[in-house]
Image (cartoon, rainbow, N blue to C red; front, side, top):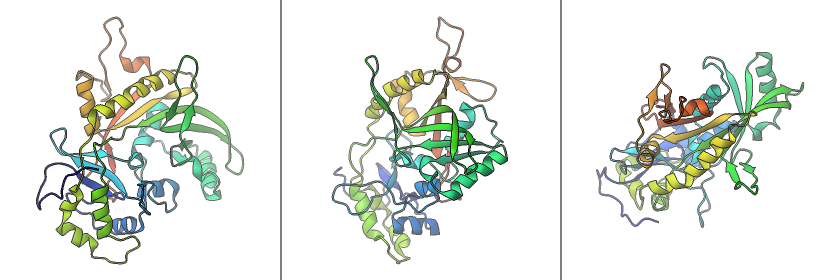
Length: 338
């Protein structure tokens, strides 16, 4: 863990836990009813929204009897202050902003057409299968997804010529269902990757102070006011992102899955990058000048030996997103910015 002491009151330099159990605790404190419920009950609001069932946070630490709940860390590592995503479940906001956008684009579905997105883990429930039946009746397309805590990552076995790999999120279209709403036939699949941040240290010092300020299942209503008076505890022991490692541990996997997405049975490959990660990547990529088309899609310049852009040669898309800190919803929604 990091050795940074609790910053002095009013400090705005360095690194701070920004969201705890889905809700902002630095530099302002979200005092909404949703924040009280999720933080007091140690719930993950993102998994809860995805499954429509109360679901505990999955972030665990050795020796802790309860999850520690750190979703994002605010850091000035790139210069300006930015939110770095510490947990992949943070990208599943309550409207599936990123995943739904990637599905619409990869499968060629217009943005105004509704789709139904469900995790694999809810298929055993009659109410969710009824939603699938209703979606087919109204001619809305249906997609299932699987991730580490929602059905498991899909493993790609190694071969003599390629390494094994796991896919963060796998999406597949349901093309036919039986009368009970059970999938009977499937269409193309989509590879979907989430880039979170690695950090030089652990946020557990700050998480422990937050936990002590809001004991689990506590009925006390004043903890947000108390936290607001000493919000600097969110920076205790918190270290910054390991930017070089973030790039190195992802770029090969990204290239590998771009190649796999060329299969005719694959709708494409999408990776979602928080703004600070994308900006740190640009230095590693030589800060390329991206070309914008009339629909505001950006592409890498054409290689000298071809007349095609990289985007035309593969179904691979990078989505750069940020947390909408002005959102009136709690947790804050996500915005695609590039």
